[in-house]
Length: 321
Ligand code: ADP
Ligand code: TRP
Image: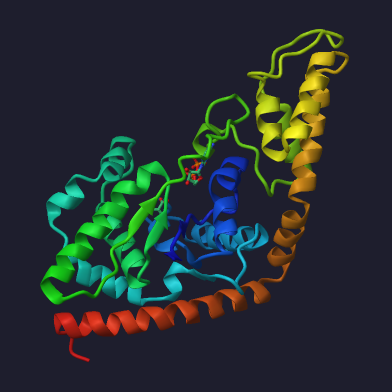
């Protein structure tokens, strides 16, 4: 199966991103043909500062490689390194009825939230369709908010194929229904926009601070504690197998330990689980040339697929040469 996830350019990844999304992608590499890229053109719609966009793209590449995206198994590149995507975006624009974009929830939501409404934001789904169709993706793993965008890509592909023959593969969105929402430090869904995250690559001091900010009840040290509904427990259990979960439950029920102890335990769990990833992240941060070479090779492999698809598209629509 050819699977194509588009990744946000952000190196500030949190436990929610990892357990709900990145971990699945890393596991999927074993049995699928993965095309994974950092969507830096898309990020331009909400990030206008050049330095930040460049830095975020670099940090994201470090982060995803550190967390297990393996360039020997997957094709991994930065979106803007394969320019054909912009050519296809233009071609697809001719096959995109305005009504299709006017119905997009994501655009309406963003404008309602105060993002300035410009053409880039409006045509975002067409560029996303180009990402998907350029690489003949069969499956696109996305969060719920992005399903409509994959459907738009599919609609555009159907329209184009009807007119020009079977050129595009019809993609399908894949949402992992089994993935639970990862709670943040205040028990709400962990999210950058709620400021309740625990960040995988934060320095040790920041990480400790984030973990100590987890909201808990206050009881005397010796009192037995409730693990059900405890924010520390709910985050810790992501790292534990069933036996370890039972052991932690017993520690809560036994009494004699306060939430400070459980937070310290969680801190250790995060540090040991991500030890390898945190080391790799630092390594790539200080070996930019190695990272850039990996991205260059990834882009070259992606471009080979893009080139043959674009040849068919150009021929179909009559682009001279
Ligand atoms: P944020 O809410 O921090 O901005 P993103 O929207 O960048 O996170 O999330 C990227 C991916 O990670 C999406 O597929 C989203 O569904 C998933 N994700 C993020 N936070 C959580 C969470 N707390 N629980 C489950 N999935 C999450
Ligand atoms: N729009 C996606 C998001 O916000 C990111 C993205 C861009 C994407 N292009 C893609 C996802 C292509 C899947 C396929 O999450």
